[in-house]
Amino acid sequence: MSRFLAFAVVALAPLPLGSTDQIWICIWCVLTAASLVTADLDGVARDDVRLLMPLLATLAVVAAVIVAQEWRDPPFGLGSPLWQTGSKWLGSPSSSRVSTTVNGPWLSAGYTLLLAMVLVRAFVISTDASSARRLLLLLAWVGCAYAVYGILAEIGDPNGLLSRRKEAYLGYATGTFVNRNTAAVFWGSSAVLFLVPLLRFAHRRERPEAPSPRLLDRIAFYSSSPAALGVGFAVCLTATAMTGSRAGLLLSICAFLLACALYLAPLPLGKLRRWGLAAGTAVVALLILQLVGGTVAGRIGAYGLIDEQRFNAYQRSIAMIRDYPLLGIGWGNFESTFPAYRTAELGSLGIWDRAHSTPLELAAELGLPTAALIVACCLWYVYLLLRSSLRRKRDRYIPIVGVSVAALGLIHSGIDFSLQIPGFGIFFAAIAGCGLAQSLPSELRKERGKFE
Image (cartoon, rainbow, N blue to C red):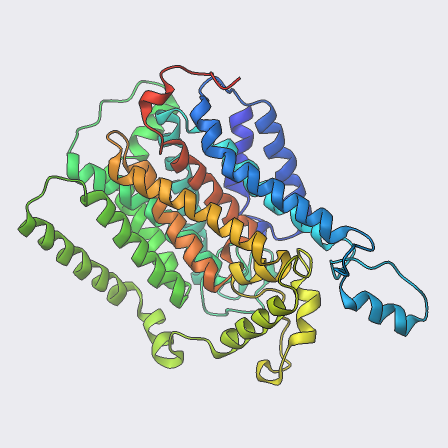
């Protein structure tokens, strides 16, 4: 039951329009917490706990910053001058605080807690290699199912979005997401989940053993066959291209190249064969872009790679960081604070509720020191995944999947907000947790349950 709850959260999170409403974050938090509390910890060793310590320490620092942001009448004049301005205009005294809103930081903390719990739960499940393989296979087909829906929905009702009508991105596939860029990264990550096991099969050419009579074993056997993996990859790639997302498709192809390079790097290949494979992989990537990326190529030709308005928003976010470098404006307060920094170049159309760059938004809302700590924590885990991708002997494809999806999600979030959408963020955290669990050598888990 504990694992079923975890699988349900990851599988269903993209469904209700990416779970962006606060109620869905609360529901997934409750279910994930219940799954964690009832989890079997027999497979967790001391080294697993040590590996998670940077995450837990970062969460503790973020919690301390939130408390400081919500502190009434903070010392050293750290309170936002907006409270004094409001008090002056209203003609009545009011308490000052760092946060520009009263409840913004507390409400924003829930999603971060959810991501951390999902990562830890996936980590605990994946301390066993066979469970890690099953989890990645499940995630791959979950992504494929949403890709099939996205393709069929775009063909059958291009202006529909589940039970409502699309207000933007008409003519492009978004699946159950409102934003096509998030959908593109979600399906691109799903394609990576199919591609790397397919590479593994092509390299080893192993004939899998016949499955047991159990229904679940037979489903796992046939869904992990080369033909099934190839179909899943093609479906997810097609859905990614149908979003028309420039960065989404280009970064997905880069993630494919990274996965191929990491898989081939440690293999004992001759220099000529290695260069031949590298050239062939690059040609295949160009063919993929040519065959399925016509819409994206057209948008690049029409608009280029740089969005002028987004670049202006980045400049305004940097101005916000300059004004509040230490503790920021309060977590979750970007939307309410940005209008004061909005310039004429951005026009009057639309609401900028996000910075379209997660690192910049973190620095604006939490301050530079905390944002730098979060980025450092992420880079540390990417390094662990990368190192394991090159050194691990067995099941090396699992950390390769982890680092490829991590690179795709983190780089895209540097120029957009895909990781800030729970439907993709939960999916991403589950893959990262799975990869991190298998980044440790198997020998370290010979003595199990020694962390107590």
